[in-house]
Image (cartoon, rainbow, N blue to C red; front, side):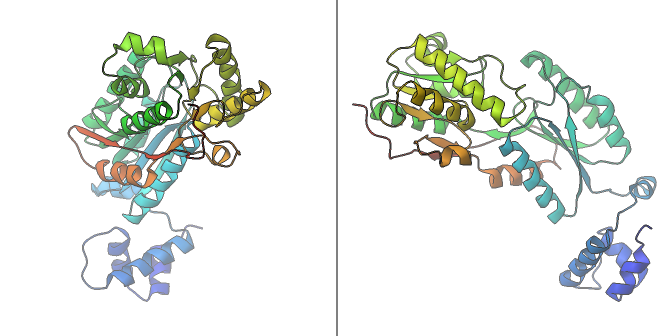
Length: 341
């Protein structure tokens, strides 16, 4: 049986109308913030669910947000989504978390969410597969639908005019400098595509070289990777790509992986070949993945500032107009690595 406002009112010792004003976050000066929080606590413990249909009919705010994301997002992106859920709850928003398959059509689902009264959307992409141009067109159609219905959105990534994203440049620059300082001038960055933010950051580290020269000298193309569904799949890919790198570039002194998970596969491959990470070759990744942190061989990395990312996404989700926010990760250089000079 559904929990009623009267049940909450009886436990809280307030009138039904007072509880209604509090639950619906209407302005009320008849009780303290602590008393209001007590009402919300009672409602949560009883499992009270607001009836958004009634709010929509009255034209009231529903205070709901939808977080749209792909099924196979990284662990860090999923942690970011969970952190946002907590932050939205703190400001009185209920959340839908909608997972999309790789080749789905998201528009019908978004129309349904708009009909349900969802006010804000957080787009954690890429929601769809396809090439970059296809993705941009799909996001344009999606954001146009949201804006036509007088809703707001923010994206995690740069596929829209309103985004919060990571600034890779400082991490790439400092890691490259670390490699060079420790004798790993001959290194390869393993990337899945051209024109990525990671590639742009690498090019910025070598302003004297053209983009094509940077690609030829420092990048190893690992092909499409975003369809990999599990950590095991990513680790295996790191193993296989490291085999290719060792064969193609004999004497290489550094490998800069797209992620720590890829680097873990690389560690196993290197050891099987008699190459000791941290002594014979320097490694770096991204994400500060626990498995790489404690694997016993030093892998430099960069940790997402999830708190800053989540705060910015939640704050900007209710605004309109262009938004370009870039937040740098925390760079972690494994100083135990021995100089190769």
